[in-house]
Length: 268
Length: 213
Ligand code: B1M
Image 1 (cartoon, rainbow over the protein chains, first blue to last red):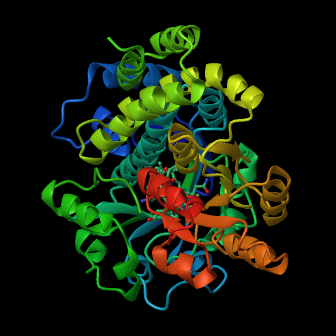
Image 2: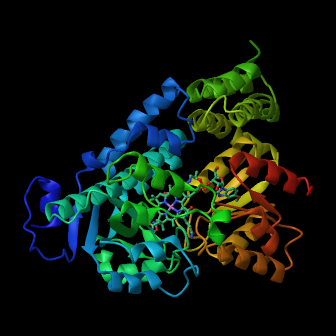
Image 3: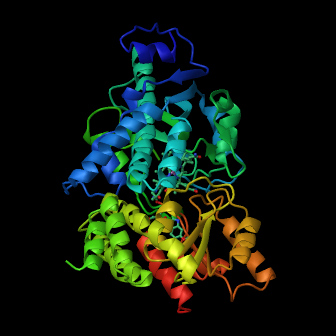
């Protein structure tokens, strides 16, 4: 059984002898990555305790419809061994000396590299809306799309988790989180080796020399499965003082709070 | 109600159609275009900006008002050109080479236009030379650069180096912004200002064109 079978029918049984999944192109139904309203409103900087205006609600609905029309989520996922990941992680040698991920991945039970996109049509639509002065709708669509791609990554995480569960490889105290180049000391140039490993050009994701992916609404990273405790780090690395969000705190908290394996707080 | 007040109020409600209608009516009533702009459109946007600052309204309402502002401006602009009335300043802006993030840059551009600036938006992935050439050709007061990645921030410095090489730093001021950019970085590379967000960027650009630090 392959990743995509697991996505279509998560109840399919896997035999324990199955090999690691080498590389799969996965198409995700756009309805499965419909972002939560609260996440979108958060991207619009509307605090959760504020009731949005009627106009905002209308914009949200219109933007969600446009998102469903213009987004084509797909990705490439591949399991990767710790030594193989060590090469990808080391990248161009530009990472911070000490990083949380450097300590985490070596203790992992399973790792999977991923790259995902919702395509370029949604970005073209956002551009078009700005060009015809539909700024509010364009900005709302941008927020929906950013939340949508995160949701797509959540679904890939869940998929990996289901796959491992079916192999009987998940311990009750396991936790799953994803980490991305460009965050927490893993330098953006890590994208180069990640691309060499996954070849996302096959689904039309390309890398610029600045390590930015085209289409813009794309994300990449590694999914790490292991004891929850391995994900627990303190935000006292030298680069943490420059971080404006400290999202890592929420991610770690949610992993322990929800007494479940997956977090609901997206990736870093 | 006074027609200019009417324009300001409809703009605050994001009613672009009514703003167009009342702007045309104000012109018919022989109110000078500059007065329609300052006391109608910009006054409305100023109120929106103030309400946004104290979280009385949020981004969607600001952007709906901005659309209404553009509707009014589309009617007034040909008159300004005909009468030779200059804008309060000209800003050439873009997202730097290697970077495609432009939503933040777009928001800054919209707010600058809302404050009465003329904005020439070069889009994203803009080369240092393009910034300089356009600013020279357009006789711009300010170059605004946006970058969302640490890997594209150095392009900002290249623009500043080119300005220095061409001895244009006194004539053309610079402002930079974007998630990884900071006040310290702006100082380090010799940019004249740093914009934390769009409201802050408008204040900074106003100071730059008034030659204040
Ligand atoms: C001229 O004067 C001025 C003055 C003010 C100016 C100005 C110019 N320009 C901007 N401003 C200012 O005013 C604007 C209005 O208030 C503001 O503009 P902004 O553009 O900042 O604000 C926008 C209105 C809303 N903000 C945004 O759209 C960006 C928000 C954050 C959270 C973000 C998002 C949402 C996304 N991302 Co990502 N993303 C982050 C961002 C972190 C952050 N806190 O900002 C950033 C930019 N991302 C980052 C990364 C690493 C990545 N992202 C990626 C992906 C994504 C999403 C697709 C999920 C999504 C889309 C982004 C988009 N805009 O389309 C990946 C790259 C995507 C690609 N195509 O290559 C990926 C590489 C992660 C990965 N490996 O997958 C980081 C870059 C770090 C670095 N080292 O350079 C990042 C800073 C997050 C972090 N680490 O804290 C101000 O900055």
